[in-house]
Image 1 (cartoon, rainbow, N blue to C red):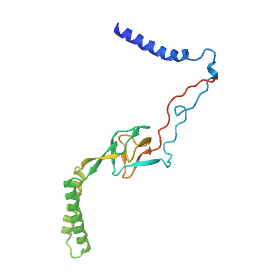
Image 2: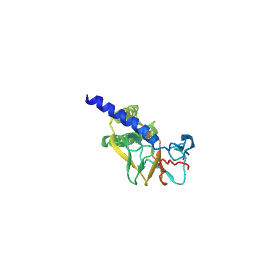
Image 3: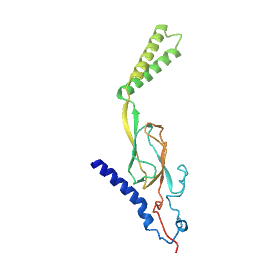
Image 4: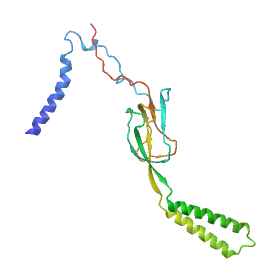
Length: 194
């Protein structure tokens, strides 16, 4: 019974919100004579990629995969507000040690190759095996993950979101455009001609 009353109430409100403005229209003025005043609601959307003097690109500092977005098209943001979170891979301590060891072994191997007539073949084979083993260990080493954050550089309105969650971004990649001009008037204006 409560559900039926609830649905009936919703339908009543919906019909009333449609019919009520018609009651306020003057009876002697035909609807066709009322002027329509275009506002921001009726104008076509601007292209998001169009750069102007009032807009600036929001860029990432680090490379990484977009983990979470905290903005949407047309949102008003303040300077320093968090816009997105990136996951970046950093070399772990084990990876750094293995890279240093690999560089040292590569240098030793190149020195052995340079002194080839004097270097025994067994020493060259052992150096190659060490290089292969270190490369294999390095390929299995797990990197550390860290979050990098992108914040709004100034107050403004996001005028073009160019990324989605899951996208991989290079360093200095453009995330969105920030429009710092005045807000568009979205007030719906109705008037009648006398």
